[in-house]
Image (cartoon, rainbow, N blue to C red):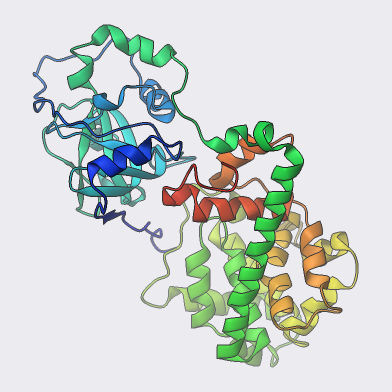
Length: 440
């Protein structure tokens, strides 16, 4: 398979408010603690013989950063300029930067992107991150000891600033252990939502946000229908996109454009039923291999999410409905209850599960149900939304782990409520708006 899909680089937003306004804003509980300083310390130059505090680890740095346990004035760039943390980001899960989607004010503007933590600046290269495009969205490299004066260079060639704690700590070395032991100065407001609002209110809020996600997806597919007019083609594109959730959404979307349903179906109708799945897979493989090669992601995926397995599943599913058409064939899935709808989309071949219950729920949530609602092709009005409300959670999304851990187990999470969490993530958590969301 071709190279991995690269993440988009962070962007810089020019500060529109003066420091005084920012300091005033930070007095409200809308993000991480921190304030700009009027007095800047002198630039720090690490002596060649400098050493790290005994037993200090990267886990300690992550502990300090996550709880913002250090005084705001301790966070400065290697050149001595102060930084203000608006949002320290969300803990990364799996390979890649330690914290994602942070918002930090530098003297020249706002930095939005990821934060990577190391004991020494040189550890970034020592760990091979300078060759890894997973770090291309880095906005800040936070270290304890800046053993290199230059900025950190990423695989993309872009350079990001380095912030160091050593200049401040070395003047107050006895305070470092106290920082690690003190309570967190800040945590996400959602972590206290159940206590403040009650679990029923929190659950109802996630229900409403989840239905907003459903209606927005339906509206998106309705616009696609207006452009394309063929419901089967629109559903085919949505199905393939749903197959890619978990790391390969974009290449699957591009594959659907390279190999349209009309072209695929025309070929399949000339073949026997037995030959159709393999022929579909061959056509999909051929289309994905055309230059430029699709950016398949392979590393860090579970076997069930590997693109080869997902392509095979997509081939068998689409070939199954070549005769009657995708919409007509899949609409029959909605004749029974939600368990029957899930079961009708599961797919096993040769003793292997190509589409399990979790992926079937993803297809129902993101493709079939919103499209039928958009096209007004439901067995009866409101049937798609009723089934959506009854869908179980397909799997725990790592991207909303912070919200999941904040509201469960008091709030039972199903597919709709997890979609509500995605709404919060996309519109608040990852936009530097923590503290202003409906759970705050």
